[in-house]
Amino acid sequence: MIIAILVVVAAATTVNDQFLFSPDGFRNLLLNPSIYILLSVGVAVVIITRSVDLSVSSILGLTAYLTGRLFIDIPGIPIAAVLLAGILGGGFLGLINGALVAYARVPAMVITLGTMYAYRGINVAWAGSNRINPQDMPRDFTSLGTAQILSIPVLTIISIVAVALLAWYMKNTRGGREFYALGSEPEAAELYGLNVIKRNLIAFTLSGALAGLAGVLYAARYGTIDSAAGFGVELTAIGGAVIGGVAISGGVGTLWGAACGAILLLTIRSALPVLGIQDFWQQAVVGILIIGAIVLDRVLALRQHKKLITTKGSFS
Image (cartoon, rainbow, N blue to C red; front, side, top):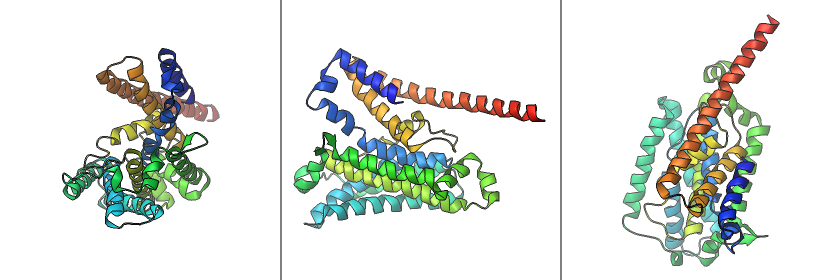
């Protein structure tokens, strides 16, 4: 995945060296994926449990608008409090998704498709035709959108830290491994005694909390927020997770892979105009990458299945 990212960057830089070596080129390569990294990683946790979350775009939009409203309605509110409000707000919306999936036992795609429209409707009703502008928020907050530490954007650092913490949890704790067990064989996991409802609630809450954090970062990054914030980003988030190696059938994949998948998608999106490829072909390329990742995952799964059968036959 990292090699693919480097190849895309090298190809675009060969055509136009400003892609990487302009004053903002390197910064934008790191900054642009920061929000999508959070969304893809959150969705990846849900996909690993053999579900999907289509509502992350609407959660991002709601928490981005919430961020702006808090600064307007509560003058002097600390940035940390707004950050926490965004995470908790997103987590609560994710918890609603998880509760509907876990207790109603309705496929997650149906539930989150419904909540995607419901959350979007709430945002439209709340925001109306109003728009929050950068001057409505503290300069210390909006400056986070372009601030850097050692030439690395602060928003990127926040995203990487969040991914590192969650990836450690998934790999090194019993709770994290239970997500994989649930996604691999849901029936077997339930017979084993795994609390399926609890795992679903946590997975969707984590996805919502990361989308909430992404909403706060969106407000800092773009400054201008209206009811259309985050519209349509859910498919890019899911695409990043799938391209990053998270099996759509559940139980397989890493959060670092999902983060790299999001970076690859955003890098390709930035590189294609430089390479002279028209806009409609950009969407097609992303679609082909997603299909290719799913086909490759299926081929590898079938190959692994045949290998297991062969091994079992040799011992019998």
